[in-house]
Image (cartoon, rainbow, N blue to C red; front, side, top):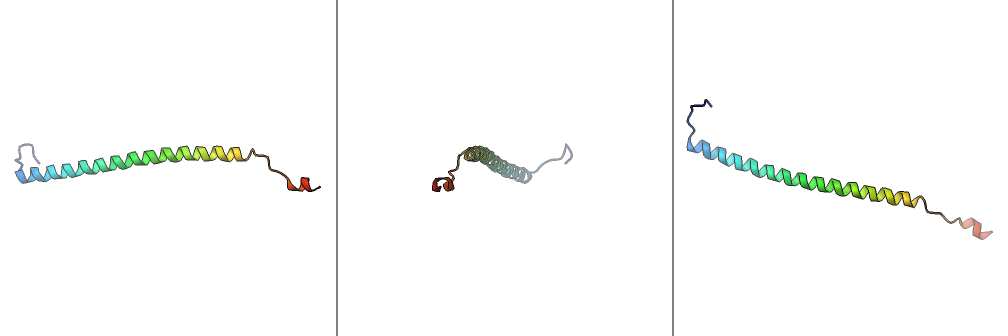
Amino acid sequence: MPPNATVTRRELDRLAARNAKLRRRDQELNDQLKLAVAQIQFLALRAAQLEEASEAGTKVAHINHDRRRG
């Protein structure tokens, strides 16, 4: 619109409604992003725990049953 154009009340109401809708959507997306970040952090910690447990599991001495029979 040109700078000197007049805006009707209806157009202002429509713009205000669209702005409110965009703000709500922005908030929803921000909430989803926060949740995704938290899930990624949890999964990273869980992966580290599983890796540590896996490495600890490979250090366990296994009993050889054949030796005890002889």
